[in-house]
Image 1 (cartoon, rainbow, N blue to C red):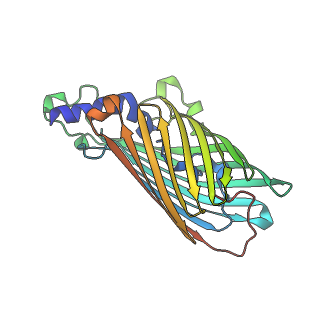
Image 2 (cartoon, rainbow, N blue to C red; image 1 turned 180 degrees about the vertical axis):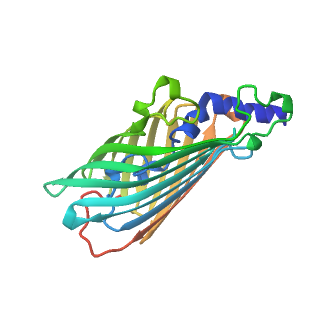
Image 3 (cartoon, one colour; image 1 turned 45 degrees about the vertical axis):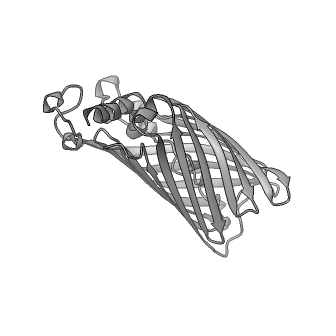
Length: 303
């Protein structure tokens, strides 16, 4: 038991702590990007409700759990997308993080197939550390490298981003937690949310009738760790998809899903290697998305 607990702590310090303390990386994030890039707001002409739950290191005691909820829509008369995003991240070392932001994007249409958008997100970010949640077999270890009292911090949060898309390619860049730039070295601690960066691109290649391949690549700086992600997903008959990918930190993953009218359901499974496999072989994500039809005109990029 103690080895499992210490292994989770070691992983948190070396890898997951960057996600738990700043932004966590999700496999199916590109389906709804407004949590990391407000410029993606309004990419769907309907009212879009997107939820995603991630179960990290399945089977390990105290394993992290993360959840994400995005709601947004497009208003064609204002050439704008408006929405809201909320995320919760609970790490295996008793950290809890909440983020809530209102997001807005202005859309510039070039011709009928090119869209350039600018986005901004404003809200709050909150972190807390509860030592009572940090399970220790040997209580003498408490206080050795970890706070022994409850700590919490809530602060103003802001993000900006840009995104370009057409029927064949989408690319975006964003900076999150901008207020972190103005925190002095003296005021920094484990509850400080530092700026993060997200850069991504996704293509859509029609191989044959009813079959398309979507390659994607991303770079994410989560506050302390750089993460590279590559993926190739096949879309069948526009209703089913299946893909394979690899993310640094020794994680390969597969993703599958189905879309039917207003409902989209997806699942992904990480296959951990190296030190990660000593804690758990897999992590899991479940995605559920609803698209409520409206009478608005479609935006130039519809996922």
